Structure formats: structure tokens, C-alpha cells
Length: 435
Image (cartoon, rainbow, N blue to C red; front, side, top):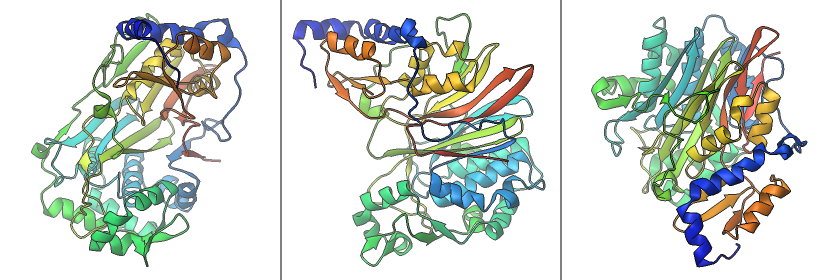
């Protein structure tokens, strides 16, 4: 950490917006056109505008979905909306910690040329008896495709998905972190403890019956609209100070956010995302939850009773004649800052997947308070950016990675629209692209 003098600290704290602009302006200098070192070792987008694309948690998850491509995602008997609901149910069974029925669920949908954004949570944030995650899927089907009910899809899914689900590396991390709490809960212990140890990423667990959890949702009348708030934070126009960008978000990223960090971040607050693209349609979903001790499970299942995250994860849509980009900032403290910085870094000039990837790979920084400091991805940064930080004599913490931005983008090539999902090279997320 770099020491600083009190007078300089007062100057910086009184002008954080100015300081942020000065740092970000380095990306707009002539050096911005310099070659950027390729850090990623995976495809951040499907290179051939593939018809069907899946965004999943990691390589191990990709192996599961490889067995389901033909029976579900390439199956013409299921509509796009039904496939989106099926994907969501599978992810719920895979990640019962942060994609449980009680988790908050946000999703952005482009369907038949129209876009929709929803955010589902119970009316009372501390109410862990409701199922906003399942309510979101119920509403998805009712609003956009009534051909098959959630119960019917769950019945079909029980026949398609393997009975044993492999533990993903991130789920293994959860099990290790909460081992002592899991042991205290008989149902959770039976599901995730083997001998004296938790299951590892090399093992599997017996998945829940999809029909059983949907039956619970219906029998307990948890589908009642009055129990939930949805579209609580719809996308609204944000004044970004630029004339060449139509910006809509679920939070005002143009203002300096002075809310205390502990409202944005907790070691217990987790998020999880997944997405499907089929033709010109796409569905991007993000679940989030706050895990509390002692661990409680839902209705004799291995699903955790979690509290919904108090704030939705930020999402923005960036549009102009060159681009139509939707991005979720899905991780870290005050994640809205990362979307705000993209505007300053001239996301309005992006006109291809390559330029979008370069923008997302660019070094990130984050202003935090109490105590006031900067987190900075020094290994990704350019010398001029680091020199500027050092010259300000401001407290800097060097970190390997900040945030996790995912979404979908559309660009026009030779009069044709290319549309696809995009992931962050900082995460373990992977894409499946149809041949």
C-alpha cells in the first residue's frame, strides 16, 4: 500500500469524480490504440455467430450440458422460452446454495425482436418462505409461452437430466466453507457430506426431483402474485453525457454512489449466472442470495433457505447505430462502477466483438471508502495508468482481477446482424457454441 499525506487525501476525497475522470481519460489517449496483450485463453464469444449458444459456470458444467444439447437445446419440440425455463431449473438443481428457489432472480430477455427485463424478489427481503426464483420461471412461461406449464417441463426434465450431478469447483468451495454448518443439518449433511468430509469436485450428489419442488411451490400456493415484487428496478434512461449512446440501466450509474460498501458487498452474498441464445433470441439470468447461519433447508430438500440479496445486480443496455450491448456486472463490491467506467472508456465506439473484448479486458479499478482506497488490476494496466496512480500518492491495493461482466452483444456486418453471448476472461465461465 502506498502512503499519502493528509492534505492530498482531502483533495482527492473532495474530487473523486475528477480523479476518476483523469484516470479513465488515459484510456482515451493515443496509447489507447496501442496493442493490448491477449490475456484470455478461452473463447469470450462464439466466433461464427452460432445459432445456439450456452453460457455456463465452468468446464465441468460444460460436460453436463454436452449430454443435454440434443435432447433439450437442439430439440425443436421445445420453444426458446421453454428451453430458457429448463436451463434455469437445471441450474437451480446444480447450485442449491445460490440458485435456490428462495434466491433473487433477474433476467434480460430478447424474444421476437422485443426486449424485457425482470427482477423477482419477495415483498419482504427477509422472507425466506417464498420462491422468487421459481415464480420468475412461472411468469416467464405464462407471459411469453403458455404451451407447456412449469409442472410439465419439470416432469420432462426428470427424464432427461442425469440423477447424479457433479459438484462444480465453486460449489465445492461453498461446501468447504460451510462444512461445520452442513454437518449440523441432517438433510444437508446426508446430501453433501461423505464420511467426515464434504463432497469434492471429483464427486457427485443425488439431484432433487424437479417435479417435487414445483409441486411444493404450487401446493403451498407460493405462486400468488401478492407475495412478490417483480420489475422492481426496470431499466430506465441514464444521462451519460454522450449524444451517441442510448443508455438504459436498472441503476443510475451516472452519479457517484456514496452508499457504504457493506451494502454492496458481503462475504456471504453470492451470485450465479447462465444464459441461452437461440437464433435472434437470448435469455440472460442472474440469481443472487445472502447465505445465513445456521443453514436452513427448504421442505426436506437440499435447497438452502437463503435471503434475497438486498440490491439487484446492475445491468445496462448500450445502443447506437453500431452496437446493441447488454451487460450484467455480476460480481464484487459496488459492481455498478465497472459499468460506469465502460461509458468513460468509450463503449459507444465499440463496433465488433473484438473491440468489445479489448474493452472488457482493459485494466479495471474500483474506488472504495471507509477506508478510502483504490483497488487496481496492476498486471493488466498500462504504464501510463499506473504512473498516474503513483503520482497521486493515493492508497492503492493491487489485485489480480476485479468484477465479472457478462452479457450479449449485437453488431451489423455487411448488412447482416451478428448476435451472441459474451463472457469475462476473469471468470471460469464457458460458452458452448453449436457447430
